[in-house]
Length: 322
Image 1 (tube, rainbow, N blue to C red):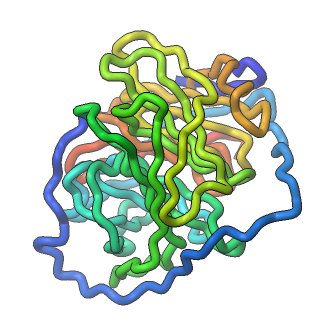
Image 2 (spheres, one colour):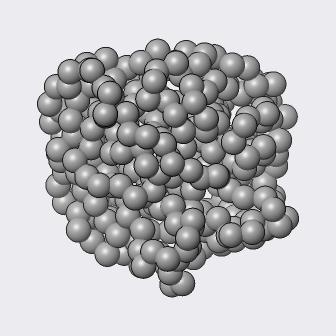
């Protein structure tokens, strides 16, 4: 990717693992995966964006191309908040347990192998985790094209330092997420920077209304099994799908995207139910072969999008309010 200030504008497949012919030497990456520390400060609502936000977006421009050989089927991207102009991304199902760092112009900043197994990674998010001093990356193994999975899985690890030499992530938290009705496919998720909650958006088989689910932050601990709670539904015409999502650094603005659409909401409450009961506005998107990835630029309302396909362009949609 409001009534109470929403913003608007407006295939999955298999890819080969990049590890087989990789020649990059990796270096160890140390991360910390511990039980979340309880907080005594209740979360508060972030400041709302200006009412003119929806009209502040310019036409998309290409900032570069991901030219690395591993870029075969990019399904999720997220902007680093600690490292300016760095994007984290991953391939779709069959791509192996690897995340990749690039600059916003497409320069390679390292391949990182994750000590886990994957079935169908569909989106990546960034947000708080066990160590309040660090950002964490969340990998959503949430795809289910055949609608047979009893649960889906999310992996979480502390964001590594981008390094062209790459690395190996050994400290990984994993939690299994259960829908009330198993076998739901999803390609979009984000992590709330205010509460730490995880939000997933399902992708019905024929498109149309997209259910929205939440997993509370205090249940997201290593090895946990978490029941997802439905908090809303995004009404869509049949044939339209939500293929990616993100939330801005402050937690005030939420984006969903489709193959050729972007929808924005201004947050109206901490739990999101009220937010998704309002109507989003549509903001600009560009013609992408199979658009499945979106992320807000760190610290702003501007956003990047990418398509699946080999060596895709990185598109940037600038808000004049940034």
